[in-house]
Image (cartoon, rainbow, N blue to C red; front, side):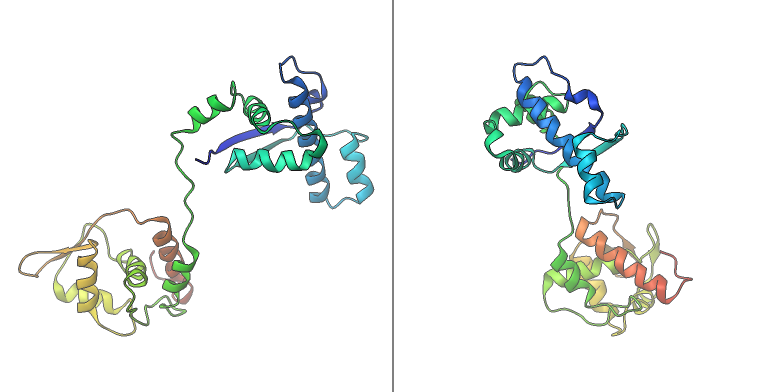
Length: 241
């Protein structure tokens, strides 16, 4: 299982001192390469010359004590990459994992794993699903076509659901008129049925009243909602998101 950890590396010169640890050599080696890598990043960011970059790496110029945040999606993969970069100076993989964990304030890698066990995974939108859904909307943010593919259709419907006011009761005519302002093909009955099937809209038994169901969209749906709202706002600045 992949582990995530957040570290703030302090690139101050005190890391060049000897560390009282059973794996002190490993930690010193790790810190040395971290300091060099951080110095190169800062030099590039400032647009300095290669000569200045090397001076910064060698410590020939004073370095500011600037905290740098580093997020590791997978500590094990980071350790493998670092081990490959170290070459002949590399230590065993488990030793390197323990060194990284201790550098982050944990007793060892096992302690880090236990502490990170409850961390929520980082969610990212499904790029292909977002692209396919947005292809069904025009530049004004109006849904211009109805997909025959259920997954694409469901993703598109989230953008329509988001435009229905929450905790508001609509008659069939009112909800239909509202959906007509969101599409170019004018098929509110199909939209109503599909939203109800997907659990995003409810109606009374006699079909006289409709209400949006309050649920939380997933990250892909949120990205589509955001993109459609952006198009609508760009086309009509008076639109309320």
